[in-house]
Length: 262
Image (tube, rainbow, N blue to C red):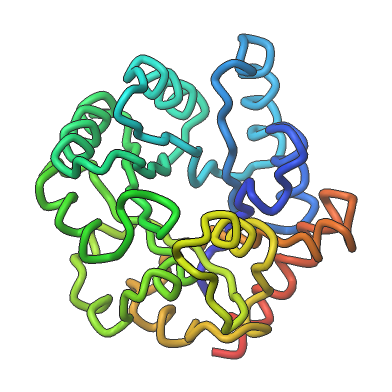
């Protein structure tokens, strides 16, 4: 069965230490953390490192590096350095730069920054970004060309972008160090309605098997044993489980039930 990681988006109202503790309470195999550079001082870094050590959980990823035409690479390098300090295996990146050549150049710069650390720089596509589909993401990664580059697949973004699952099995498995997973309703938001797109992404996701996404096909196309970051952003779950540990447990148990049914 695939290792499962608690994505920070499952518990977005909680800080890094509470997120790690929730992943441990919920019985996850790993955890992911949201990095807001302005919040990360020496004390928080020490507390997060201690919480990871106490939990015994590996840090699957940190997020998010959001590439924009006018933002400073120093901020992104700071996110990478925090991830490296914590032992993160991956960093999640998205891009709002319509210039795909500039996106590729910046991703290559990030890849060079993490050389020797073991960290992978994973590009995620989605209709809320300027890398809107799978084909665009793969073309950018071809231009990056660095061995630390990676592709992050999320089934909701595959579906909402109109990308198909048919070509997933042809992707170089070396580009897929991990993947995200969740389910979602069949109804797709209007891509021209940005607010509807965001609500769909952060409030309306569902437990694996409860929605309409072709998750079995998605899972079968991944390299065997791929770690899965359970990116279940759900207002329904947040309302039903205000306690982070209880919410994490509900998500972990449902995900493992679904994986066990495959």
